[in-house]
Image (tube, one colour):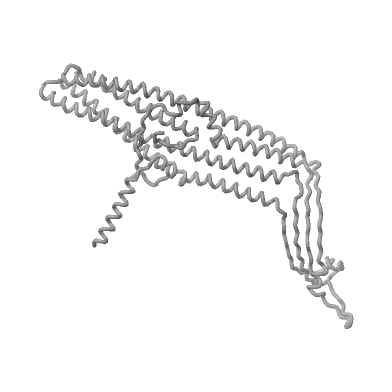
Length: 451
């Protein structure tokens, strides 16, 4: 019985530990990149390109094919080995081994290997970009949870203060020291704040669900995130210019690397298309032999005829061939010229795509830098506003407690404090996210820990 009780206790402790497991931002990102199905699908594209590259390399080697046939002929035919007419049933056996290798074809096959190598790099960069997008989405979802946690806490503190004031005011009303209308006004404010708390909790629940779904976890139950120290202040990203950040991003961002490699791929593709104008030279060789039931020999003594032995025929009929085949393209419906024109267009298009990627990256960094700077300014301004609003509310609370301020003015003062605190929280998390994005473009890992 003690053993069973010990086992049950251990299981309970293990489940409790799992239920209380805390997820950091780094753990969320790592888990998503390891287990996300779309990430796995993207990785399959890389493996597919690797397989195609391997095939293109092997296509440079000579081909080697063999064959054999066994059959019977009925009726008149010219026997291929005796070169005579055969009119009865004839057994034939044929054996063949052939090989060919392209000696020159305008370097098309070599360029195809080069292009496939570059395409593999582009696919890998696309995969890296996809993983970066997933990581930023995870960071957004994670910060949404932290934001709503703080909003809930703020609203709950405000509601708690109103409830305490409402209880005190109720006693004063019962004692005849305050008007009944002031109590009703405060109760209405309490109901409104309670509604705010419910709404904030709902938003927090949705934020948790959103992040859990991003991670493809089966349930939100037992899922909790770490609340790091998010002290603000001027961060390194704002101490340098957005142009400097852009320069770093050009060297590290996979979206730019992918666009650059696709330009290289298109240029190799143009070279391949131009190579189709060149003559091609192929070396071919073959070995063959066979057996025919029509191949008869006459015995020199008995003068009786019989089918020539199999081994003798295989030896006698053994043949070899070697040939050089030259193919010179002269006119093929202008298809080669058309393919070259299309390849040139693709080169220009890929160059435009590279410029678009660079412009988009510059705009994103400039916008994130401006947003982070604005959010920091808003946070500093809202912090000043919160301090002033708190002092104003403290003064209003004292006046209301002694009956020198009515409930309407009291609630207005409290609403101003709520508005200031809400703006401070919003600006705080806006700055944290935009600054995190800037750090990310500078090649730093995603983290909410203090630098």
